[in-house]
Image (cartoon, rainbow, N blue to C red; front, side, top):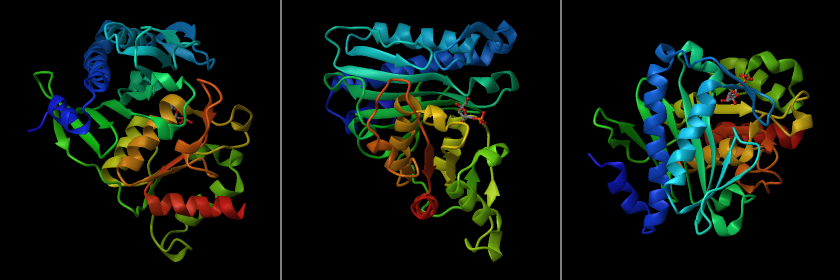
Length: 315
Ligand code: P6P
């Protein structure tokens, strides 16, 4: 079976770009090992600090961020790190060619109940600075710490999936992920219904109306509350993920972050034939204004995303 190093050689001739990706993959291996033992080490609790978002940091958020920093500091090709866990961007190497934006441990509120969480990352050309549109990404990926430890990665071509084997080697298990065009599964936090706009309300109501409703088919709902887990399911079997703008998040621009959640996930989903939108425009076309900027996130099966876009067009 093909491994990560062999596959990267087929995706880019740029050895330093491959090296930047391998540094994040190596951080993922180390973070996964820490997570597997965390309940024993008593590390699933709070760190006693807040991140720039004002969210209480888990001890493992801080530990994961430190692991990423340690791996990137050792790679002279990495210029700047943007992390959800750090208020400011960190300068790592003056001659570095790449910037990395990462959420080192997304979904960490699920750690104490042993639900899949992940490390999300985006690779940008340092020459373009930090605030580049998602279309400018050179690569993006995530590590999903689940029953298996999976690395989902896209350079410029297909979105591929690797599984960590017992020897610590990333073995390719999906050559080219394909998000089915149609799906009968949506992922949204329905407890937020009272905050939804007309488009979100219309799309969900149409979906739950089932076979006799306007959508003409039965839907199921899944919401893990861990973006990596929800997106991985969609990449593997289709579906649509919605964290739309609502009356409570509108003042902040949304809930999820553009540089290190929305952009990398949109890059991966679109590389597998899916679609992404803020409701009004493609996520990858959003012009960033800040390193911790938030955006509405709707992505997954193209047919479903188009249905949501049609609701926004009517609104
Ligand atoms: P809610 C986790 O905190 C996260 O950032 C994403 O991983 C996840 O999709 C979302 O927030 C969950 O949000 O509204 O269910 O708490």
